[in-house]
Image (cartoon, rainbow, N blue to C red; front, side, top):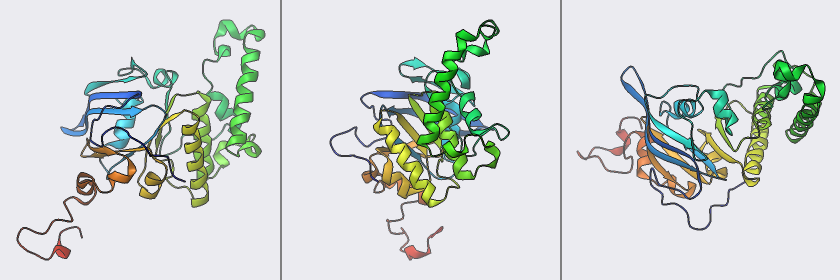
Length: 287
């Protein structure tokens, strides 16, 4: 499974501007105890692509997702989504704008059924307002539409046979599928997926990858955090690399593996350069 990366595109350099950028970050900073966990000067995510966000542990990837999705507050900077500023907004308002995320540790509601988990994520439910709840004709049509959408997603992700089971009984991989289906109930323009393959068996991982590429082909924009380089190289249209909270490289998958800044980020030093003192390179620290 390989994304189509042929043809001209943006220059492979950090902070490059891209045609049709959907999400644009400027000067986004977050510090913990005086240490800059995130300091991204400029980053753009192009509409209709799969962008992988990679980097060593502690690079700031999940923190950046937390900031953009409203689950954490930045110390500075701004970002826009589809031309609208989202910094300072709450998570539910950001989700309503069309930017929806999933988490590395799934957050299903264990004591609700699979179907109920999906229905809970449906946007703008009229029956939630007391004035409308008293008049069934106001919300019954919408409820039928939400149920039809939920059933469609359950079939798509092969969870339909589990629709009436409690979410707490699902396997880890099934919960990943449920969380992705629940995110799609909000009809987002863009998905932020935090390590969607973590803890998933190989067969189910391939299924997830197929769903992600299909969503891209249907026009959805996807940005995901991932450590498995085979996954990154197999499905991504673009790769952004973080290290020490900063964006150190960007480019198509084919060029990222050869980028010396990426090698530095993962290995800690230029592993292909000889030692200045002539020492045996096989004895370098960390080798």
